Amino acid sequence: MSITRQKKFCYLVVLNKKFLTPLASDLLLQIEQVLSLIGIKWEPEAPTFI
Image 1 (cartoon, rainbow, N blue to C red):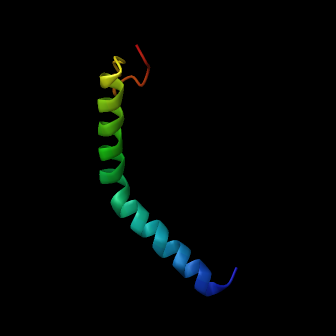
Image 2 (tube, rainbow, N blue to C red):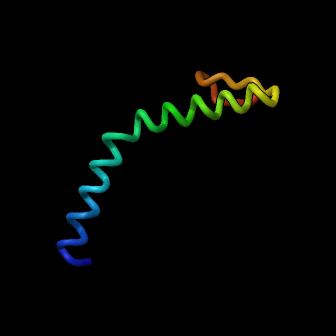
């Protein structure tokens, strides 16, 4: 792998780290909403399906 490609990859990882938490939070909320629509209750503290 060239040095240029390594730098781009590291930059991408840094960007992903910066935006990962809000993105994951939004995604989790959407998953919870869909599960509740189909009648599945999911508790985030203990990630098991009831």
